[in-house]
Length: 268
Image 1 (tube, helix red, strand yellow):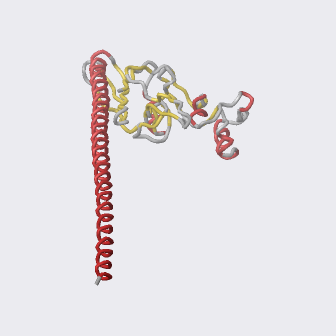
Image 2 (cartoon, rainbow, N blue to C red):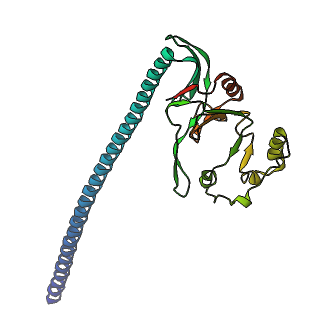
């Protein structure tokens, strides 16, 4: 009988100890769960704050982009309005051919004014104009915009050469060559043979180092001063040039044979 009591007391002691350990573990687990919930709450608040700040920055960026777009759009409209005012003045005071260059639509309009408020459209088509701000891989920045405003034809010429400026090589992340490093096409060749020599006798890598390039600008050039030319080029209908105005061969010849020295050119 005493043995049974001792066994029951021992079993009760084991159960009490086990129950106590379970309560202690449950309490520790509850504390850990509360700590995790607190960390989750803090993390959730942080995520919400970061998300809110990100959305705010996105809204600010969209606002600034909209303002920039609005400013550029406003400038284009102002240039267009000024061009129209200049065109009206030409119609009343200028007799002869003049040219309009629309850098937004990349179109040209050759017109003839009769000096009495009337004029007629002679020819119209696509052209390529300046691509604006650009940079190379090294972070060097250039503004290749076509300047707007009123200009005049100051010079014309046939079979023009293109002289590569220093920024040509810099834009390709290359060091401009020294004068004795240029590849020179023989001047003893005719104009057509120089073009053939450049295209067929030199590799693509060698052509990069030719400073005086024949045929790149087409058969004609119309000089508007300040380094801005009207010449042949690809990419018409786009803002693609380094500031000059690119035409098709047919349009370039038509302008060359029509616009006299001193003819007004309105760029907007």
